[in-house]
Amino acid sequence: MRRAALLLLLALIGCGEGIGRADLLDFLVDNSTRKQDAVLRLGAPSNSFEQQRILTWRIARADHGYAVQTDNSRLFVNADFSLVLVFGPDGILQRHALVPLKFRP
Image 1 (cartoon, helix red, strand yellow):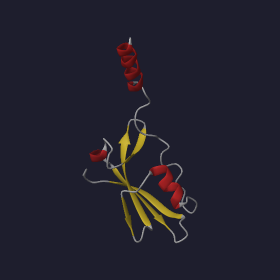
Image 2 (cartoon, rainbow, N blue to C red):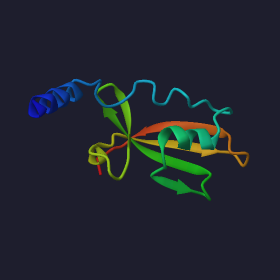
Image 3 (cartoon, rainbow, N blue to C red):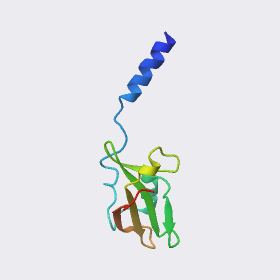
Image 4 (cartoon, rainbow, N blue to C red):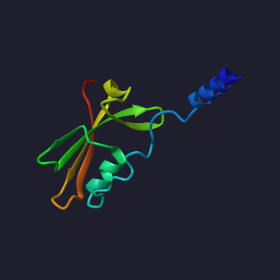
């Protein structure tokens, strides 16, 4: 009985929505989004430059949109884009770009 319940649970988990979100980056609005909101939604950036004025994340195409790549992500080697966010001294997003990678790391 326990084994059957475990197998049923695993089957239901396998039927989930898949990886990724089509609206993952929709919250990014130049001259509006705060740095702390970006980090809360996307997680720790993969890189930072100019005293954390510029933050980047590795992004992959996924089943249902985009997924942020982390060091422990199973899709780490499949990053398709670098998301680049440039913040002003006030911590407000000045501009952003989703830059396609020419090669996969």
